[in-house]
Structures are given as structure tokens and as C-alpha cells.
Image (cartoon, rainbow, N blue to C red):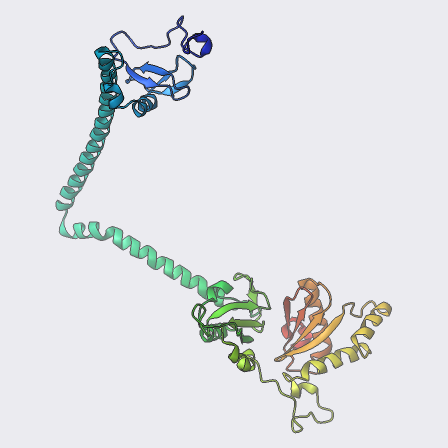
Length: 395
């Protein structure tokens, strides 16, 4: 039967000794971190190679593994007489001594660092004491002054950037002050007022009627803000002042009865024209701009310009006259002094602007108060085309 530590079973090769210690080196017991073989190592070395599995290992780790496996009780157990006890106690004492030296070396290093730090602090204190009084005050407060200056400069920079973004461009377009999520939790009255003060003229508020107890979400707290129906609008993009902005806020269900009062904030009150307000013969239909009939009057004038009676006929006209509109308008809606048209197609922003300009060009002459067209495709995004987009409408 072969010995468990024979060369053929992973034991040490007796023909080659890989230990590099000199006869005067004091070896300590260790355990290979790879194969678990019992070793004797030089504690002054950082690494060695296991004579059993030929795997390199860290000496300190191998010693630590031996200490964890060997206890004082085991060392004090007499197996084959007093000699065994002495061998184990000697090995343990070597390991403990090595650990104590390592700890002492670490402590000495930390003490030296503390002494150096104390010496530097003392040197700075003496240098500060030798300075003239005014220079000493500046030395102490210099860092604070610099920090305050940086904060002030940063605040000025942010204020300037905010003012620039709030300033309308050459077309009168302005940016939203914050993302929709930034308004969440604020009082909707204040949000509507802020947006109106910024220059937006078509700001509405709508209650959600979603509260049961009002413990988590409070009444009148904003849930989201949409711009042209989009809550994920870009704060770097500029919008026309009359773009539709809706502030949605939390409310109890019984507040839904008051939704009409809030929903028309920033818009003229919609009402049917009275007999006294009816246009006289020969007058334009501009007298009812903003009323419920306004969109239908724009629609009628637009269809008359093409010589047709309906949107379906308008598509038929395109088959004969390529200049005629090729888009399918499904409805017309009054939005203050604007008109929103719904197109049953997935149109691009450029296509929507072209539609709006065509409607303005054929109707603005008869409706001086007609301020613009909002074109909405199947993507549910509103594209605003102001009256100023058509030069002939501003003449």
C-alpha cells in the first residue's frame, strides 16, 4: 500500500527540495492554500511554491490557514509523549510570534503617519502665528471666501440661463420651465399661474377625480403636465405661446362637476352666438370667433374655396386636381381663436405644418381674429401653425 504522501499520490518529491531557506532560517508550520499539504515556510518570504502540488501561494495566507486548523488544545494533547507536545507548542509559538510582529509593524507605520500629520499641523500653526494679523485673517477665511464666490457665480449663471430660456425667440416661441415630473406634487393654481406668467396663453387645468381618502396624494396637487398632449415634452424645445398645455391635478370625484370651469382656463368662454351677436348680411363670420360655431365656419369657408361640400368630396377633387388636399380630415374643433383639425393619417410635423398653412391661406382673409391651426394626426400630437406662418395673413 502506497503512502498518502508518496510522490505518486501527490506527496513531496524527495529527489528535489524546493525550499530556498538557508540552514539558519527559522521555519514555521503552514498549510498549502491549494492542496492542504503540511508545509514549513520561511515567514520572512512573501510567497513560495508548494512542494506537493507545485502551486504558488502567499506565505502569510498559508500560515493563517495553519493557525485556523491548529488549536492550542490540540497542541497540548499528548499523542506520543512529551516530544509531540513540544513540537506542536514550538510551531504554534512561531506562528503567534510572526503574527505579533506583523501587527507591531502595522501599528508602528500608523504611529509614524500620525506623528507626521501632527508635525505638519504644528508647522502650519507656527507659520500662521508668524503672519501679520490681516494676512492671518485672509488665510483663515480664504477658502470660505472662494467657496462663497463659487456658489454666487453658479447661482448667477443659472439665473442667466433661466432668463435666456424664458425669453421668446424671433418667432415668439418659448420653452417650458421644467419637465412634467418636476411639477408633480405642486399646487396646480401656482403651476397655471407660473406658466401663464411665462407667456403661454392656452393653459388649462383638469381634475382627475381619483382621490378616495386624500392621505397620500392631496387635493389640488399636480399629477402631470402635458404640452400638445405629450407629457414627455423636451424642456430644451421651444413652443408657440398658444400651444395647448393641460395641468392635471388630483381631486375627489365630486369635483368633476366643476371641471368645465377649470378646463377652460386661459380660453374664452364657449357659448352659442345670440341673436344680437349674429353677423349682419355681408359681414364676415369673425364675430363668433372662439364660439362653438367658429370651427364649422372655418371648415365651410375652406371647403367652398375648393368648390366641394364635404371632406370626402375634397379627396375626390385630389384625383382630378393634384394641387387639392390629399389628406382625410375627420373633424374640426374650436380651441379659443384657433381651430384644431384631426387628420386620419400618421403625418409628420412638416406635413402637419403644410396642412395648417393651406387652411390659413384660404380662410384667414375672412376671419381677422383667426390666430392659427392645430393639426393632429393619428399619433395624437398637436402641431401648432400660427397665423404668422402665412405671410399673406399678416398683411
